[in-house]
Length: 272
Image 1 (tube, rainbow, N blue to C red):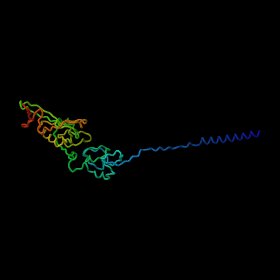
Image 2 (image 1 turned 180 degrees about the vertical axis):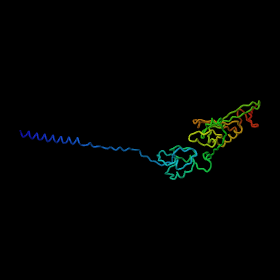
Image 3 (image 1 turned 30 degrees about the vertical axis):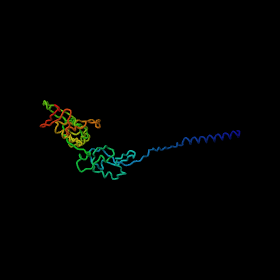
């Protein structure tokens, strides 16, 4: 055999063995696992701790550690009325024992304007400065079937009998004497109980200005019937009819002057 052929054959055998060895190693080698860690990028913003309600707080609720707590709040969304821990570190302790004068919802920031501390009754605590509370006798037939609740808005309508001075004919006059009046309480109830409407009461307590209180007092004496007319929530900010100031200042109206005789209103027409 030619020596050159023998050398070529040996070289081919060695190369084939090396190739087979490398192939076997590549088959048995486990693939490398690459782990990619994803880091969530969140925008950084400053926060402060705000005093918030843990649960719904109804009118008259006493503030304590069980119903309010500190919660992180973005500084960009903090109103000037919020109670901040950075400004009042003892705010929770300082507000214990105060009464809620306007309801809070769970998670809502607490504001001092909606709280009051008083040694008197709750009604006087929730009554705004300069306003008066006047009680009015009601029934189901004079209070929208008993569906009027505290914080509703009503009109007060007076119905009275009048008799013409010349012929003695009797007629009825009805007019709205007060408009858009807030109901403070029905009997002793100043809020709904767990979302359930209160039973029909016998007394409605209304929030009035001193002048409106005088008008209602006079109307109670001269009228035969006072009725509460429930207003829609959509009309709460609507323009209302001026109060019936003529009932207390003696103004003459187009239908004449009303004279009270023996408890009966007699209509006197001027010029007749």
